[in-house]
Length: 369
Image (cartoon, rainbow, N blue to C red; front, side, top):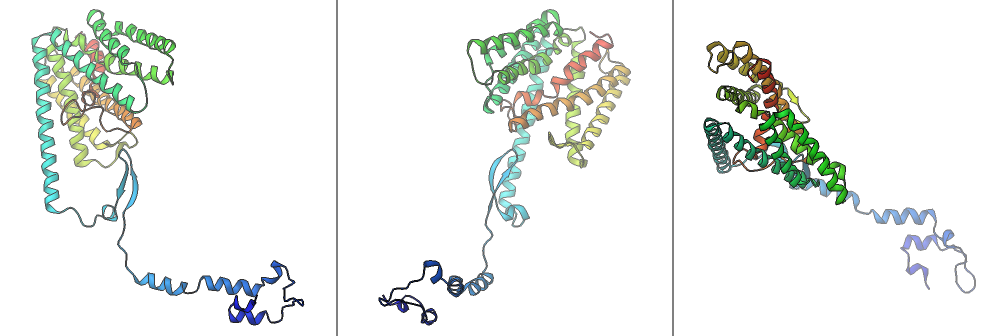
């Protein structure tokens, strides 16, 4: 075979001096026949025109494309450069539609809130049994929301035992007080443990934990309100508890939105600010001062009203942050959707679940219970 026909002319010239035997067969090995000149020439051939291609690409313009990004709490989403730079904001029609949706949501929140307040105080006016039954209904709904949320996160709580335990806690609190209901929580621990012994499941420790947590966190904490409902001054004492807790929450949101810059708990709740906490505390204590000074909610005095305001200002945010920690662990925004515009019942009770026991202790301290 003619070797010069297989190589470029320059390579053929370099091979003129190759040693061949009488039959014309090259006697060199494969390694010997591929010289360093062959390597340089073949490499140069591979990148021929590279410089021209790079220069041409530099002169062309390309449209910026979107990138995939993971947004905390929302999962994976596609984010364009316009979203990151703020260029090309929404057109006026889109902004108007968003504004309309926000106004509609705010109106729904207000209507739902007023309805819940009216039903609650109507039950309170009707008597301690009625408001306790309403509390039991809210506790069961909140407990179901919690169990459904943890199920979505991969846990398997025993909902039946949890619901029966919650009802047992409320009944025992009605009969013998909230501290007597602690025995029911122990019974829930025992029953749940036996459940996983008889019916083995994966991760029994974690599932026992979330089952008992629902009963202790929701039902046990809420049961401290029952002695307040049954007291002779139930209307005043309950109103002080509800108004101070709601006022603290609203003031924290308002001051945080208007003046907030320093995060109170950036890992648990980025929207909570130090300024919001301080502003809410000031507003709540001022409300306690006014209530005590003018005797608006007897038997509360100046000292007891201010003490109640301070305690609620501390424990209300703790309750809110505690639920935020649970939701962040499960990567969800709301525990449920039972209350239009507000999320779930547990989302509205989070602060109350900590202020109710704290308020109970304040009332016991001042001799109201």
